[in-house]
Length: 214
Image (tube, rainbow, N blue to C red; front, side):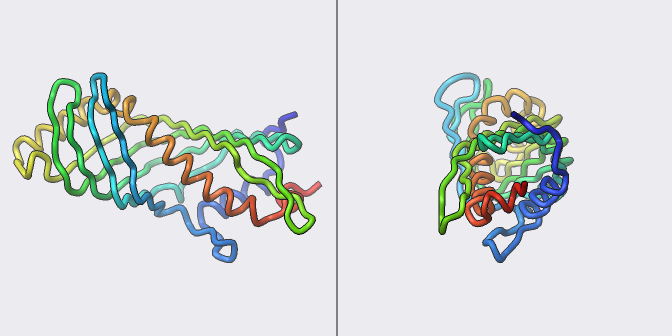
């Protein structure tokens, strides 16, 4: 049985702990969120690229608001919606391949902005016991998102050819919707893995009965 939008104090505790962090439990703020590496390899289709991001810093999650909280305490199932006004990703990239009809190559720094992000989160947990107490581990963490706009800026495209690089950035931003549709599965997987790790720092250290008191 799902409980909908109940236990507001729990929702607020989780929201504050995940977003702001709690160092005694080894939980640090997710703003900025650091992603060491994100590999995207699209082998076929309209977007056929090898794109590698490195040392990504992601900011904006401090403004996230959780809503539509649902949880089935007995069966360790949880879902929520997170709304974030703006998410900014900055870091290094390397790219080679084809975007729609145009070839693309380059490496350097990049910035991606996502406006009005709405993320749907679904967690399925698994019980385990430690020191006579019951804990939970997030066994499945599904993260899906939509945005009203993606804007991109890749520096040093085409070995620094400014005209080609500027034209490509314009082209990418004009076709952001099609590009995001191709890249989204890989981005969602990485975000889901990152948030699962962060969530488990809470779940595996705080007894289940303390998170969900009777």
